[in-house]
Length: 274
Ligand SMILES: Nc1ncnc2c1ncn2[C@@H]1O[C@H](COP(=O)(O)OP(=O)(O)OP(=O)(O)O)[C@@H](O)[C@H]1O
Image (cartoon, rainbow, N blue to C red):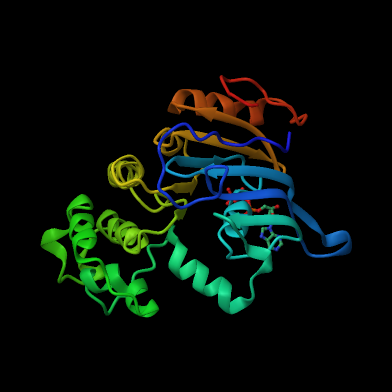
C-alpha cells in the first residue's frame, strides 16, 4: 500500500507541483544504522500533501511519522526515493540550497516552542524573515497577529506568556513568510486540551482562511480531527488514509493497530484508501 496520495479537492495557493501537492515523497525509504542494528523507519512510502489542505500524519509510536515529516521537510535525507517541495526535488540540493529552501519556502512548528527568549513576541514572529534579509509584509504580519490573538502581547518576552500563547507565536512565526507548506511536529504535545484546541483551530484557519498548507504529525485523534485528511503509517509504510476525519473514527482506526497484528492491509474504520 505504498501509493496512497492525499487528494486535492479544494482551491490552493499558486505554489505547488503540477499535481497540486505542496510536498510529496515518492517511494521513500529511510534506514537508520547498519547491519544488525539497521532500522527501516520508512519503507517505500509514496504520499502527496495537497496544497491548500490540512493533512495529519498518524500511526503508532515508532511507525515513522517524524521521520516522514523530517525527510519531507528537508530536515533529514532519505536513504532512497525522492522528496519534493513543489517542483523541487530536495535530493538535488546542496546544503546551502537546502537551508535556503527551508528558510524561504517552509514553516516549522515543533512540540517545544523554540522561541528566542531574549526577543519580544513581535521580534520572534519576524525573526525568520530578518535572518533571510527579507522585508516583512506589514499587512500580512498585522493580519497574522490578529488571527493568533497576540496584539496585546507584542512587546512581551516568551517567558511572560503561557504555553498556548507561546505556541501561537510559533505558529505566527511559521506563517510570517507565507511559506508553501508548514510542517508541525506534535504542536499540541506540550499543551493542555484547551490551549491545544486553540492552536489547532489556528492551524485550520491558516489553511481554510489564509490559503496555507499544513502537514502535522500527531498521535492525538482529537488533534487529527482538525485536519482535512489523515494518512496512517504503520511499520514505516503508508497503510490508510481518511478524509473529513472525526476523533472517533481516527481513534477506531488507531485501535485497529493495537487489537490485531498488523498485516499490511487497511483495517477499515471508514478509511478512504485508494
Ligand atoms: N536517529 C535515529 N537512529 C536510529 N533509529 C531511529 C532514529 N530516529 C528514529 N529511529 C527509529 O525509526 C523508527 C521510526 O521513528 P519515528 O521517530 O519516525 O517514529 P514516530 O512514529 O514519529 O514515533 P513516535 O510517535 O514515538 O514519536 C523507530 O523505530 C525509531 O526507533
